[in-house]
Image (cartoon, rainbow, N blue to C red; front, side, top):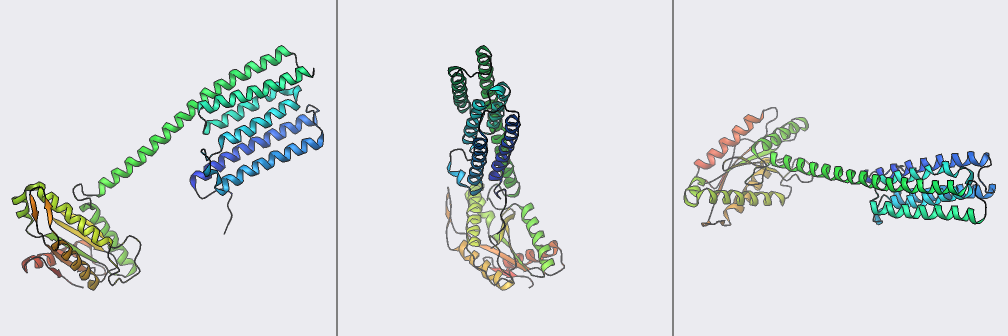
Length: 379
């Protein structure tokens, strides 16, 4: 199995990319710190300096392992944004403590940390982190004042503190505002994607029966014809027509007729979902028992991929019994219905219209022979 730096999961991959952005910031900080150390601006022994750099590296390794292994999903925030920012502010505070001569310049590192929070943090979390930073920075300044080791006058240190507080509070409001905008955009995108899926479903389904509409079932038939032509494997179609449906409308009204059409579609759909492989030429693919749609009025079309005529007859006969054996219920009463079916198999090289014409001829013959029967035209 090939190991990958990024996860195959899109969300996890995005989180890992954000982590690498933070890791790159660490590298920049270490480079700046090393430069300050070389100039003698960092008051820490060489061994301690190496140890701190090593620990910083190991902490980032831990974050990467959590993200890459998927253990981060057990956190309320799988991005681990706040934990990463907490660790980063701790390292910045240490840097402030051991580099007092360039403390004013290095305050900008806090800004970098807070900008990282735009990805996920809310205002409350921002303000909580701001309080923690100000407490930590205040501790560092007071420690130096107590030890009489301040590199700059206290009024200037106080100015740094005020500027830092104002900047971080502003970043808290700005970052949370940007975060809310991101959430709104993300939610709108999700709503748009849902609407597009629903529109696509509406575009290919019949409003009344929920089956595929004529345009889409014809498209499915054409795709199956092209596949059969390419693979050399045949398939069958079954054109169905509810018997004496006009009488249903006359007796129970159009709403009653609508009820019958919906129940008929439900029974056929349920039947083809449970069909076994009825003499398939090829191996059955998942979800491919058949494709069913309303062809027009009370006529429906069933496409049976890679099914020979023998298997198609078995399938159609089971559907015919399913329709005839149970009552159809309407608000005006119950009734019995039957269905006539016309079957045909694809002939290599023919077009779709010729195949539909043969199925229609077989259906006409089934009607002429007394209805509630199945007729086949060609194999």
